[in-house]
Amino acid sequence: MVELDSSTDVVIIGGGIIGCATAYRLARRGMAVTLVDKGPIGYEQSTRNWGWVHQQVRYPHLIPLAVASVRIWQGLAEELDADVGWAQGGNISLGFDDVDLAEFEMWGQDARNAGLETTVLTSDQVAEVVPGMTGRWTGALHLPTDGQADPSLVTTAFADAAKRHGAHVITDCAVTAIDTAGGAVTGVLTERGPIHASTVICAAGAWSGRLTRPLGVRFPQRAVRSTVVRTEPVAPVTDATGWADGFTFRQDRAGRFVLAGGEEAIYDVDLGLFRDMRWFLPVAWKNRRWLRMRIGRPLFRDLAALVPGSSARRSFWQRHRQIDPPANAKAVRATLAAFHRAFPALAGVGIESAWAGNIDSTPDQAPIIGPADGGPTGLLIATGFSGHGFALGPAGGQLAADLVLGDEPLVDPHPFRHARFAERDVPAVNAHRR
Image (cartoon, rainbow, N blue to C red; front, side, top):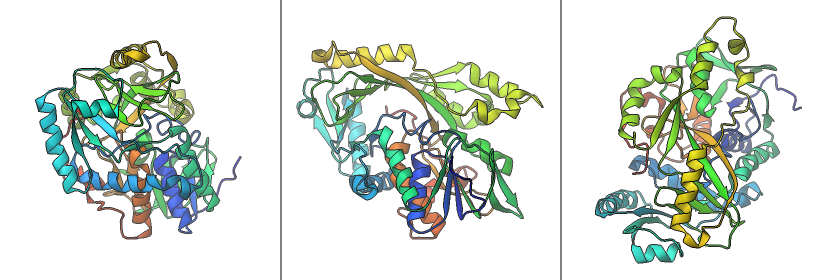
């Protein structure tokens, strides 16, 4: 067991890709850094994603962060001295009618204005990028500089590199509160004792709001659950990742296809829905075709934790130590069936594994990176990456570190400020690609 620090320069709450990337950047600059997570590194979100490194984001002012992240990804294995499974095979998003293609052209113009290479492919060109795929598409949006990496490797690589530069990484130790005095953070309280620090970065993914709310720092954030399927290995088909007809795909270097149902995700209703209802109900209604709301254990657990003295309240973090939601069986069947239809030559390919994970989302599908508006001095937030966390992780960590160090920011941090919610400067976007 790693010994708990009594004091440090910076405490980072959360051992996902954002927290670990930030820890690495700060430690490399000579700061004393302690990263704390209630479970293993990258367990809940950062190792459960699709493995995409994509720049097709939902509004133009997120593009610079995506482009900057890809630049980092391109040299990340060498920088971290670790295998991260990086491959730059591009991404395609299939279009099925003239409306789709017109939207691709409009988005592509915004992207090109921001310096991102993108084209609209014909149906014949799509067949060249993904041979053997059949379907009804009329073309596709193509981003040739997109890529993929192995989620099981990347976050650990950042954590290990941070440790080599002197960071302390504490796992299986929950932060129970952010400590303050005189309007400034003084550190954190953990299960194993306090850690004193003048800067605290909350990068706790879907749990971030629970830690900041007692300080009066609030922001709308919900978790959407998605299921992922990994097939048995097959011969190489394509290096590209893709949005296909009802599913997404990438083929890893072992030959296995990693698939997700591009048309459905589940939102587990909890008490947070009522707090954030005005922010998220319009998004949920707009995306009702694919978003499924369910009432079950999360709501009942929240209600039980309201009872003073209850075991659910006393042992909240122990009960949420390692969240491992089950794969949705219906989604697994539908995703595999869609894959078999699209790749008839692979119709006999079965499933190697399936899992589910939560995506912490904001109403405008953009992260919060920066100081807590109205909060104690020294508190920064790096959360709410809304399905882009893996792709944006290297740049998100760099930007968070820049803000702590007072360096020239990697990109303009203004679009990611926490204050945008109080200012009502929140773009209305689709939560889904189409």
